Length: 341
Image (cartoon, rainbow, N blue to C red):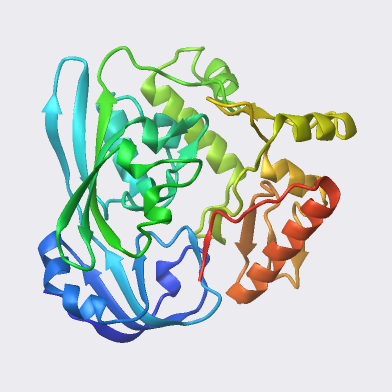
């Protein structure tokens, strides 16, 4: 069984590549190991569960216990001719899971290809891309209650999903530790979605307009690689801000002043989603570099980057400056998607 270590560098465990330390560090390989360590974990006042480190900005050293989740496993628990239910350990790498499903022609995750991070973060954040969210295929979340060590089960409704949001991010934040999720994926009659972004165009040009699970995944990977920097080469957290959702009346007002403003309808209500990257770019931030150490990515204004030796507090200040300029110009608030510590 792994033991708690002290004064550990977290630089290789955060994709922004920030040189920070934690006072205590523990790696968890399975549910039983977590339960066995539960007393020592809960005795620490500050606890941070860490997966891939791709959705976090450290502004200082973490004076508490970091629990690194390494719980693995992919098990088919139910299957018919039409669908399969797959239970996945929360420490699995998300993109590896997507590729596992794509190779088997299981539909539902292909639009979520190349999203960084681990499986356990997917329901917390209700990760999404190109018109698809994890809530669309998730049937169950298993978790351990921190106070009691009891195993809890949450069906899709109990997760109370919203846009980049869930009950695990609100009422249950810090109260449960997610150990696995279960997904229902299609084997036939796939409900594909190629209406967002450039997916349809890439499939037309590169795949002779043949729509398949593999081709959609490849198209998404190609698009993401053309826009988003590889964190192994340039430190980044992926998309730093959520796309704001605004009222139809505010959208119409903005559209009068900014006719090229893109938009996407929000299914189920009259609100409108507008791209934060477009707002940021219109304010002149895209490609801006500060002291050659950090800034905004040249290809995607949603991505803040660390070119080396910047600090998390500097990047946080940059994010706040971006927020202010967007609000001053558009009267729209953009909210960080990244967890700022």
